[in-house]
Length: 420
Image 1 (cartoon, one colour):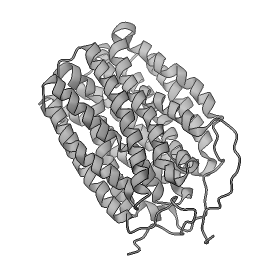
Image 2: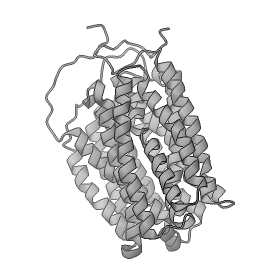
Image 3: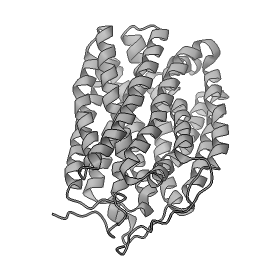
Image 4: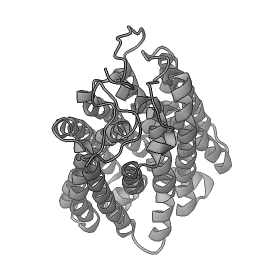
């Protein structure tokens, strides 16, 4: 085996299997995050909020999430993913219960920020652990299954917030979202994981972070995150207030699309990413780029067509294509550095994409929406998907001529550099 290769020694590990547990955790992660989005009318009434101040709930949560992600990644590389995942899940579950008990908008902002701390600790470590746990030929599928939890959880959160809040109040919905996460926090302390994810390496982390391919992937993730975050936050306003669906019908549509197309998209993306990625270098990035470009006309149709059946069809197809992104994108990041820096690169990717993409998205669209409809304001998301698609296609072309990590048993020291 060449110098710098991964020592493939099978070490038996005890504990709860990583993929099913982390998929369940991801379900409640996104249920908790997105349940807020469909309760905005009730929060606005309770605290007297404008659209812009409502957008701050997303901005604060995702901004702190991004910062926490950046800090937690290197920590996970040093102390191991299990401790960081446990701390993250415990923090956000306590903060969600705190959200239910908030007596002012300031308290609610504080607890939503604390939720971001927990989610930021959890995310990079989960991605790195799953990439280390799955064989190279099946990492996209593992990440696809994992992100199915995101699709189901996010859709369930939107549905629960819209349907239950009128009956049990927004505080009751937060209790439903927070209590099960306490049990998951306890379970995550016993997850099957190596104590460390270290591998031999020759270069510092910055050599991989400054690689132009990683920068292109980071920018691509930023644009798609901006677009998706804006769509998710304003989905209730678009579907119920502007397209005229009833609360029950609109909530049912969000749930159906999220469950059917969200799950189908992330799992399909994982399988197609592995299939293409096993045949050509850069295949995972190419799958992401093509899916984003296909989503552009579908997203435009969703926002410009007012006929309800046509709107539902465009929305369904657009969500399916956008959901393909989740599994392959994490694999792309994993391929761009040795496993020693896996959590660090995942953290920087999540930090950058959420600080510039997620964090301001809801507030920016809300600001534009003060002078236009939310549907027309959300057209900025379609532009973001176009730019993201082009960046991932560019990254795929670069990867075709670069060394990849985590694909083969042997690794070559040093950052990914062109061989042609």
